Image (cartoon, rainbow, N blue to C red):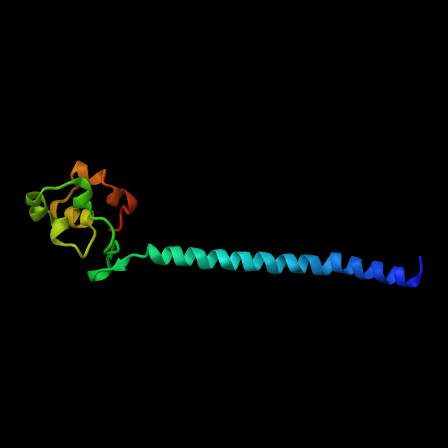
Length: 117
């Protein structure tokens, strides 16, 4: 083996030993940063708006519980959840009535964001 082959071999081994792991580390760091930015963007879309008193409520364009459950106009007018739309419907009903009706506990809005009290 002549000196130029030995030098080339040492340079290749150096690259394999040092530069390849360094490149992998930067690639993994870039991928992780990209994932974090993506997750933060998704979380921003699902972010809860803060209502009166610091209570979190679903974003305004989210479906309402009374439309999902199918409450009549009379039920809506007597429902604390409909009257107090700045707080979650189940929280308003629990504070006002002390308990939730069975149809409210099976609602997709309640199951998606339970127990913010």
